[in-house]
Amino acid sequence: MKWTEYLALTSKVFELVIKIKKMVDVLYSLIESLLDVYEIKMGEKTLGLEDCQIENLIEGVVEELKVQAEEKGIYLKFKKIPLPKTKLDRKKIRDAIWNIVDNAVKYTPKGGVTITPKIKDGKLEIAVSDTGIGMNGEEIGRFLKGRLFERGEEAKKLYGPGKGIGLSVAVEFIKAHGGRVWAESEGRGKGTTFFIELPIRK
Image (cartoon, rainbow, N blue to C red):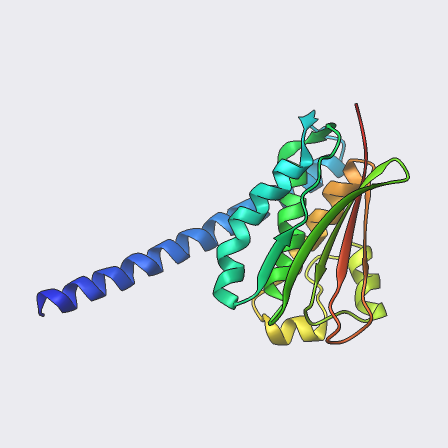
């Protein structure tokens, strides 16, 4: 084997190892999140509330998922505004936002994803809008019930390996904070907007 061929092969192996590590990290995080959800529901675990600037959490999520969006040729925008400090379980809210934004990027073949926070009726609202495959009323209903391992037919076609776990975990983490999650879509091919609403605790 020539030296140049060896270097090329080594580079491909290295890239494959990096991809496998990322997949393992995501899987480990999901398993950890599922255990957290179970323990919270059983009353065996409480939230670790601390003062947070949620716009910084969102910014971190965008930085993490920007490469994934760029590889697909879509945009990922965050309309950052100053927000009041609020008490949250930093890791769980970060994971919830990450799961919803990751899902939006994953199921958006063209166009992109925009994250828009605002204060509405004394609560924090975060809208994650995509130009992706859209959802019908039945799919939105299943999502709101937080059922694990259920996805829409179009989602299965576009991304076969997914199991819908991330969205279910996000719903449960937001509920545990006294908040709620909902989705709106005009139908197939017209994109979806996921909304996260959280109380502001001082």
